[in-house]
Length: 208
Image (cartoon, rainbow, N blue to C red; front, side):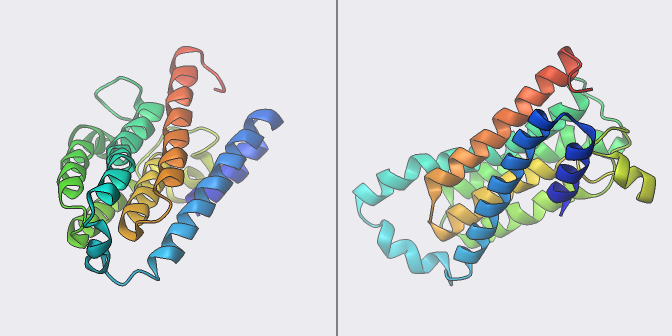
């Protein structure tokens, strides 16, 4: 919902070429996230898949994309934070500062533990639950992506939406054991897009 709202606002407020690229990324991210959730519904428990991972060849095949996906979770949130706050230690609100300085490092720690215990669904569930906190409306930067929310509820939940989507895609891929590489590529594209926006927004003052 957050990404769709952002895509609508971005399309209305930005140039066609920039908006089209962003909307395409939104569509791809949502498609793979929904597919991951749908696939996850057919996987009753990670323990049921443990037998498939017994062979060393299978472990080697999935180890690298899994590592990428677990690393993508905190990096995705950090990239989202950089888009808003840049390299400043402080955010636009106290909550934003809390997320950047405390919550994202905690997410990184849990991601590392979950990587070592990737067949334990409890850590994946915990990581997912932690990913919801940054969505609490807190951003007061009045721009194209936040204006609709600020006008209605006084603060925007959009800033960390991309980080949340990266987390959702990564966890569902690891949890289901399906489409690991395609999920890793999409997560990488989101992070690269966020970092690109950070550079252009804070140093080139584009698109605003």
